[in-house]
Image (cartoon, rainbow, N blue to C red; front, side, top):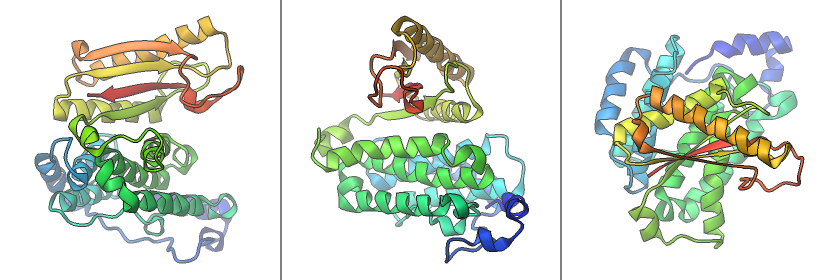
Length: 311
């Protein structure tokens, strides 16, 4: 795993004592992947990845293969980044073999700023929430959502180690929170989905977030679109549904137009990524179907989104 931010963090604080604000972690965490075997294991995990729609282990293997593939195509050049690709490829192959593959422990990653921001504490608390949902029926009842939440959590740690400024609340974190919300609601008995129905029609959603009043892709949003395009190409998904949305901070006609531009942007990026244009269904709803209900005029980042659903 990459240690490139450790020196930067040390310079910010002037002391490694502040970096060790959360007991039990090392500012030189183990490097579990091997950049020398990245190419081989990346190829293997892609070749062995089960199709979507299986049990939790199969879904986990599928999604770790997607994460490894995403990392290998994201422009990384350092040995640490290649090692991360290799590491997640190994996790995918272990899941495919039926081994127990837990979500990452943040103590094994070079996450800075426990003081004063409590980044490691946030990650530890999120992991407790994730494991609780997995252990209380999530793996069996919602295997696709549970696997996607675990892989999004691991992606959050990996991305934050490399660029904490943007990634502590970046696309992987948002994907983790959005993905975990649905099975949690169902596990509590709200709009529960029968397990057989969930397995019969696996649906995958990627949320592409935009800056306020913008329709251009941020670097983080482009990463999510690229991951969705890789998923479509690998599984030959038959239909892709796009829904463009906006927050409630402007007028309804303006927000409808803005959500249209956002959906068009994502559609164009998917096509550039190898998705066939006739596979894509696109609509835009402006402020009328907000993921997070708010009052009029409220700037809510989670409502500035294009939802990509793969069927």
